Each structure stands twice: as C-alpha cells, then as structure tokens.
Length: 188
Image (cartoon, rainbow, N blue to C red; front, side, top):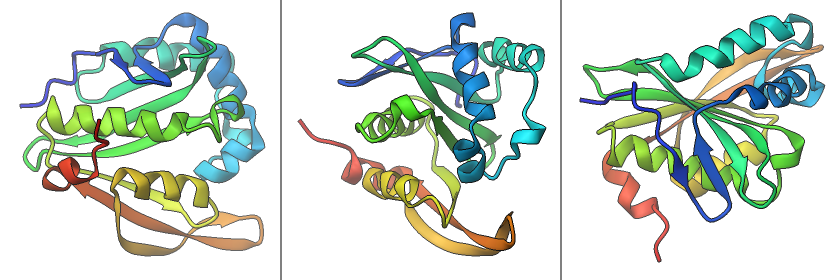
C-alpha cells in the first residue's frame, strides 16, 4: 500500500525533489502571479491566493498523507524552481493524478523532464502505483513533449475544456502504467 505520509528526497543529476521549506514560498508567489503560468495551467491570475494563503498551503504540503507534493530544486543553483505533485490518490485502483509547475528559471534545461522521471519512478517503484494520469492543454506543447519523453501515452481529448480569452482549448488525457515504466525509464 502506498504511503504518502513519507516525504522523500529524490536526487537526480540536475534536480533534487524535496519537501517544501518556508524559503520556497516566494517562488510560488511569483508563479501564481505569472500570466504565462496561469495560461498554461488554466488558472486565473486574478484568482491567485495572497501571500498568507500561499504560505499556509505550502506549509501544509509536508503533512498530507493522501498526496505527495515535492519542491523541484535546481542542483546547479540550489534554487527552488517548481513543484511536482502526485494527488487524487485512488487506493483501490492504485492510481494517482500528476501535475507539475516550473517557473521560468526552471524551464528549457531538462530539469522538468528529470523531475517528472524521478517522481514517476518513485510512484511506481516505491509507492506501488499502477497508473499515473494527467491532463495537458493543447497550447502547452512543451509540457506534452516532456510527458511523452517520460513514457506517458495519450488516451483521448477533452474537447474545448478550457476557455482562453475568446478561444477554446482542448486538453489531452495521458497516462503511464506500471508495466510501461521499465521500458521508458532511463538506462545507465
């Protein structure tokens, strides 16, 4: 049975995934105020929580026993550049949803790909998950490429799932299954 109460430190070549600390909060305040982050995640900057609510949210992440939220830290700089999350835990089906967020300083250097590989590997190898799924919006091809590199497979499209100004954006449902993970895991 998965134990989400344990908040591990997962170390890769480029990133470390670790529990949140108070010093991470300014990164997430920046993220929720960033119009690009809001657009790609389907959030509204106007609905972004204030500093007090953001601090309370991240202070509580390390005590959750039904989800795993970890900060993504750039090993080169030591800076927190985002988060990875396994949530919506379904114990009977051993499945979770996955989501991630990287601020501008963490993008386009392979940090996201490695962070996704680390958390997915942990989900299958340590938590005993069977399935990890996600949704990615059509106007976020960078994220979709990362998910495909890690081994996620498109399952279907949620048509016009997000309103972006005057246009509608589709969301693609993707997943990876435990028996697919060894084939997509990096070697060497």
